[in-house]
Length: 421
Image 1 (cartoon, one colour):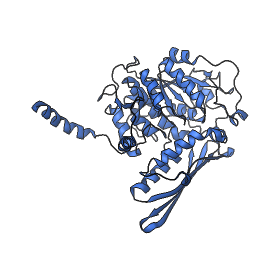
Image 2: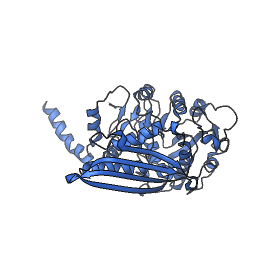
Image 3: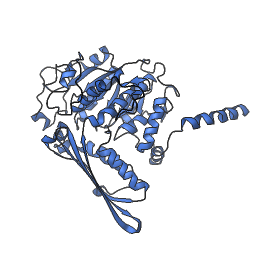
Image 4: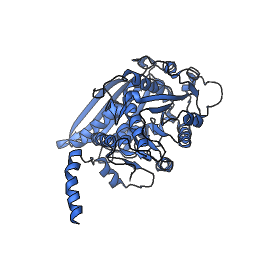
């Protein structure tokens, strides 16, 4: 583990990428779908929120010195003919986007540029999306010219090659990266090293929702574990009406998604489960649900005396707004990482915001670690050279950061001991 940058400061001096602190966060979006729509809408919905206001879905209105309104969208990339060439404020409402509209966004004067396709357009998406004509934009040049701080990637599930291509563009441009989809970047040592070599932070992989299927399943699984109920079998079945579920009808694109969601749940157990007894994954596409997602969870366990205990849950959410607040917090945490010159994968933020972080940390502890990160007290990163053992990973998963009061009380004792020596 690496602890780079300044400890105990909030928005330190310029880091390894040459940036200093700045009040604005200049963001580029890859993939102007429902999730991007909710993210952009939310930025304007909460732009006048008070710093001490409690906002649903945000850790803080002002996080580490950055208000929601400090996020500026300065570049966007897509391949859809309905969106390319339009202002971002208009493109987020274009079909096939079908999420909840809770805010009308003013004109941003940010044209959606023609992005790279690679494997981003699958069999079913190609039936509802027509590719825009023309060549791929100069992504690196745009990121540099517009002084972008970080890229948020909302590519479709299964976009392995397209994701890696955009990561390479971000590295070449010298910007941070948030990987919101289940292609493994932030958790992989190879990419950790690449970002560390460029002096850049990354948060990944696969965004958790505010209260979605995965986080609900994780919490229930940990409840079984903590209360001594043996989990014998479980499933999570999801279906919805957005293009994400349409895309995932192509089962070949689901491998990393199933790994991500399954590991997010089973990592809450201190024992191994037979893979045949766990099923977590998307099930079907129901067009009339639009951006709503319905989730069914069943858990079968064994209690005292080998007596059975079964639990079932149905959850209904609007899928994209459900993750927009989480991404809003992740953006501001990544900017703090840039301010502090941190490099590699940010451990605390990745563990709390993502389904497949490099270290699966219990959610209550992960939240404490993010709060410590915001204060500047937990700057741990992974730079791809750590080779952590399973025992070390288990310890990290259950180790909470020291409370501020405990640290301040311990400081005089450490100083006295140093003086005596």
